[in-house]
Image 1 (cartoon, rainbow, N blue to C red):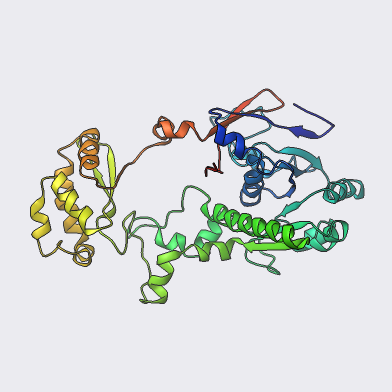
Image 2: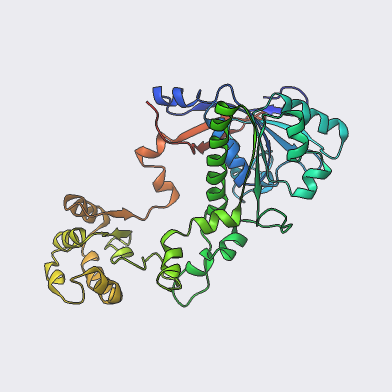
Length: 380
């Protein structure tokens, strides 16, 4: 539905409403957020607040037809709608205002919104923000209590454009992905964007808490690169402590075996195993009637299993091929072995657990869009 000219409001209805969701929808009911961001990372931050009840006003570039992701459509999507499935993934529950921020009149409209706002989310380049009078200095002068959350690609003062895959490369993720001896493979979700969004959300929440105590606003910032490096976890310390440069290993784990190893069942379906403890490996062998492996010196301890990963995989695969995926699932659950069925997206959304995180929205052109909630914690 369309309100004032150029402004759009999404009316949303959770598919599975419950008491907890009602509480969640009102956590930030008095919070006003201005989103000066596009693509994924910045809008994901705005989405978090929209899902928790905040009024989120997304400013889109009128001259270019709005957020670039509106045009990122699959061939199978309707081409006559204003929204792509990609855009819908991070813009649920927001109000949209199309403006040309090169115009003084439109700049003033945003400044008026900022007077009553609590948070501004920006991924503008620094020079662009200054030119359009959307920088922290300008907006802080209008509203000293504003929390201005800035997302950089490579860091403050670095005017280098980037998308997620660029940061996957620069932060070492791309080097580690894919199968040995083959070209790197990017993660199929823009995970660096989402990691940076989490960092920025955490910074905003801390700034809001501090404002409650001290009554002052804040400039909060992070970069895609910092967020990516901070998320390298054990792969970083494997280098920093052990001098080990992680190599492409498919889904296998450099420190544990069998963990991340994928096996094919007799019906052609795939299962991944994550035996993270010695007991779980023993239970896996019992489930497969391969108790002899626990006495084999090559597999008796985790360190030796890692060193003999290929031989272990071959021994396990021979037995996996004797079971259908359902038969195998039953046995692994009986023996408390961590495993996962490798599901395609259709199979994922056949799970009952998927239904509770789904939501839908009816856009102004009458198109029904479904998406998944990103704030999925519970508060009782």
